Image (cartoon, rainbow, N blue to C red; front, side, top):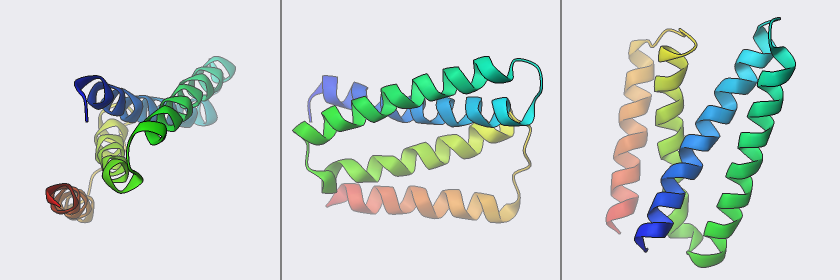
Amino acid sequence: MTLLQLGLVVLAQVAQVAGQVLLKQGMTRTDGRLSRVAAGTLILTFWFLAWLKLLQGLDISYLYPFEGLSLVLLVFASNIILGEPMRGSTWIGVTLITSGMILVGLN
């Protein structure tokens, strides 16, 4: 994996999280609904196209564990940006996902 590919992977995962958060905000608020949903859709479109480009150049078995990164980032973003609570079971899940990502990445 080149440095450019790694940067695109991280950018794609951050874009996926940002898109999901914007969609959630757009669907639960009345002010700025359309602009948030449109921005979320645009960002998720970027994520999709970036992911396709990454799939073109990398093995899916190597690339797919990075999807776990977006899950972890989404938990933190939902807590910080959306104010959603993080319970003990959430922390256990984040720990298990992170451990799984590390184990798969070591192979």
